Image (cartoon, rainbow, N blue to C red; front, side):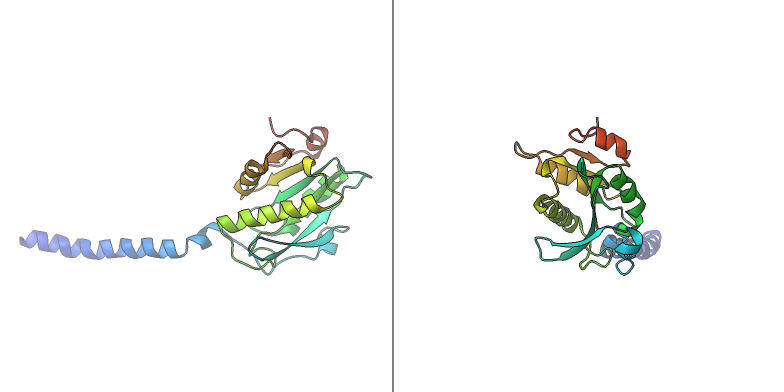
Length: 197
């Protein structure tokens, strides 16, 4: 090895070690770079969404998650919206949306994923899907919800809504729609049996 080769190896060694350290650090904290829960912040339902029912349901891995069910303002709901929150914030951030949907004669379930909105657990892709399945199962057991008239509304982490919609279609059960951006309440009410075109 020549003098130049030795100097080059000595210079590149620390750079390679630095890159390896950076990659290891990023791998170790990757979940914190994806999910941004605020687990301790949550406005009370009575303040954020008057008239909403505080509900809980259990996930298949045993976590008890909290949510708010807001019935339609009219005598009968034309459909029920299952809201999948975005990455930052909690269900109280979506209260104005729910108030508008309720006035449009739609019932709504707002819930927080594991690790969000005072719920136990740590967010992960598999965990969010379990949370979504548990929220849907809760709705299908309610006597005031028609399981054939569910609409999934997702923000930011909306892939969970899309994955759930894809996994729950069968010949006995259909998804009324899956929206990944804000539907106009009147459009959902007018076409509750149809998904986005």
